[in-house]
Image (cartoon, rainbow, N blue to C red; front, side, top):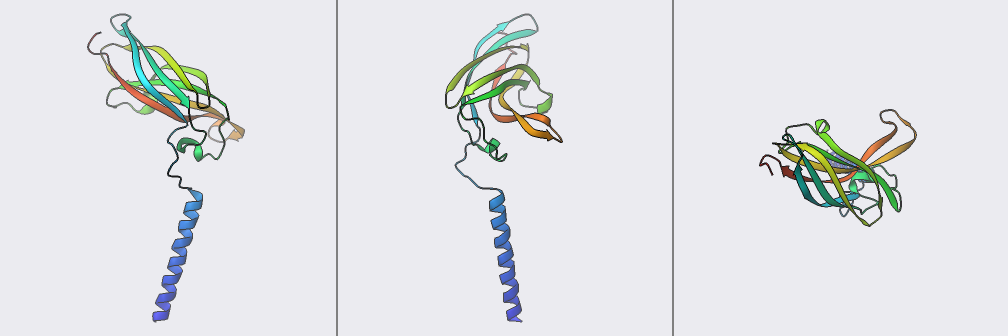
Length: 176
């Protein structure tokens, strides 16, 4: 009877070890891998002017850097990003301060395509209009248009892949 228990324990140990090895091969753990490929930093409001009773024109300044070719947000795709230049779309999403609106239903007051050079800081400014009397949470994102060799069943010929972003808040309730 003791021999049977030892055999069962040995089999369980082998099965657990095999599952752990397969898991670690499938999902390679890289603890030093950065979060994003593109970093959006130094988000600052440079100008807020009242257009009329219901609208403000706001200018947002930031630094955008294509810092890492391999990062956690894109490493699972097993496809390399371009070497030196990366064409991205910068989007600003506006929603209420503190949440409450689903991500996909936020306003997109600004979107522009730019090309980033690897490891070069790109100073970027954008200007857009927001409604007066609200607190806004502004999310700035960078996306890369990824093309497929053959059409994907869900996405089609291409899709926007998220590469990094940043967020800031603005209070338009005080009447500047």
